[in-house]
Length: 256
Length: 256
Image (tube, rainbow over all chains, first blue to last red; front, side, top):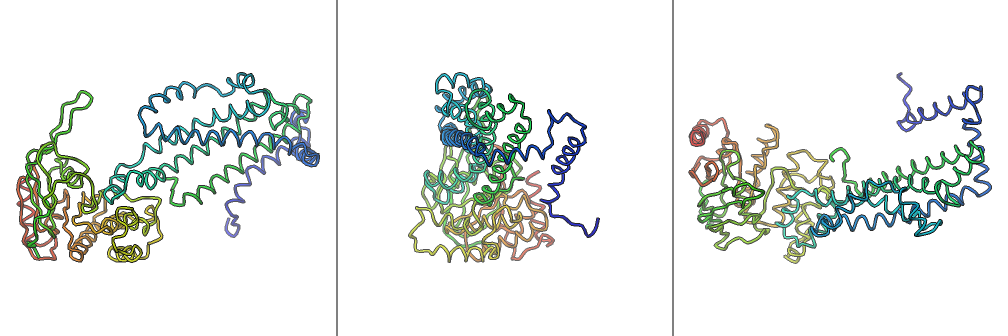
């Protein structure tokens, strides 16, 4: 195949495009029941309707607002708690069993309770997102702060660093790649939890939009919603990777 | 070049080190009544069976460990904590991966304890990078450097704070044979240029004979000084020299 050299990003489009094309053709030629599996072109057409009517923006805004609030809470609580647990024994002994007991519980199991406590609006969603997303941040921050090469701290002590200088100059930057991984996982979990929570109990949001479409048998709208949800997850994860290259240019993924 | 008539810089005075028992295990005696004296400007190699506590000797001198009994004196005063007059060079370089080559060298100079000593940071960094021949790599991260370059960078970072003694813990053990010979010449060159006292732990007898003024032979654990050999051969020495071979053979019979 000399002479035909595509950039790698273009090559990576071939898989998804082939699936879309096959799906479109299968639906057009009546190979599948289009009530259950409408062609993607119909889903994209419905997406246009959702955009122009403004309904999509309303749903998207509601969902992302909850996600951002819950995620921000999870990151701030998770980083401080993880760091404190790694450095202070008593804090670790107090919180570690709690974390390990709560972590295996599906966040959605707590959602009915959250509705009772915080209502059907934003509060209950923010609560379950914050809870579910804080675990990866806590665990990764803890691992990061604990895994620092002891010789780095020794070297910096020999050079004359004070305890504060060691924390700011060594412990913090050394944990950053771990914290970043935790934050990225937390964002992914937040996106998963919000859709599920909105399907269980909400009056607006992407999850609610998809569920409502299913109940009124508008399959193309179900797919339109799923496309948007997928695109957001894909784009934001790409954003996180770019952000890491910018924030941690020294970090090589293969080394850890 | 051998036998620098320097003043006494380091003295181990009947040093015993016992690690306390932990988790049901018996206490371990690592060093037993060790006496040793190092004069300013000397290049002293330390050899001995693996696991005998050669590195422990350096850790005591660096101030990372405190003797159970006896005293480790630096310029006549007992060592109580790490300090920049005694810099360690680790076997696996303990470089700060988030700092560039130049920033690693500058790290020690920027610490509060070392500020205002009249040295210009930029000038010192440039001078150090020139000394270890890394001028062209100032903006590289440690992960972009080869093993030999990382080791040179660690030496530069240590020398930047103007220590009186360099404690080198098998600094060349992780390098391939060819790089290792080059680095032996490099270290000697740096020693001749800076006139720093060097304590150089190695498990390679030839390396010790090629490089050192004096060679300290350590006994099996719990370790003490078995013998001190004055090499007394003119430099530069090659490992192929019959005189070097003679000394090396004599030392290796000691270690058997």
